[in-house]
Image (cartoon, rainbow, N blue to C red; front, side, top):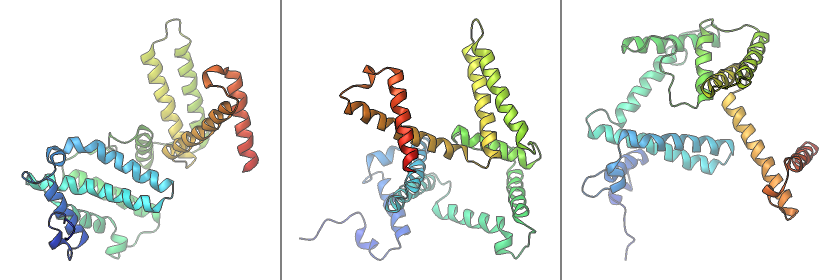
Length: 279
């Protein structure tokens, strides 16, 4: 007895993997024989999965788990194919249209590679890139602002950095580190001014904390540190150390709730010292 075959498997054996993937996706969305879950999805319903898959790719890369990276990239590619299939069903565009548009954009935005155009340095290349993007927005009748098309769905730290970089390219930026640091200190003072009010306004406190975070992102940018990655590393370090605190408490046959803050702080300091000694 032969093993059961997947949909169209006999025709897929000699098919290019990308064509096979597109055929699988079309089958999953087929109203008669497709998967009920896949059939009921819409552009909006898939968005959270797309964002999640992008983060899983990033996580696998940070862990340098290359087999996992391969698998997660496949999951992310599936998201693209899913959107393209839904668009094809609605007569909007298909996968080939997406690829053709990407090919055209990449060759046009890299004239120094594909058109033998010469630029004096990397800054000139970047300036041409931004000029091409601005031209595209103008041709599409889109928002002409230098801040246009910065995705609202980006993590807030990443979006803040993108906003600041866009403005900096047009001269709205400090040339030295001093004023950047002063701004962070100013924002801390403004947070505390709101906190010490007789009747603190939580809305105003949140606004001032937001300003402080924005100023801190600016400091990170001037120090050439990616704020999103820096915070991810800080999260990872804190989690690693706190897990060691938990283990230490457990070894003493205690629970976290039974320990005072002073006890936990002392264990935390021991964990930090051990880490530094082992570096």
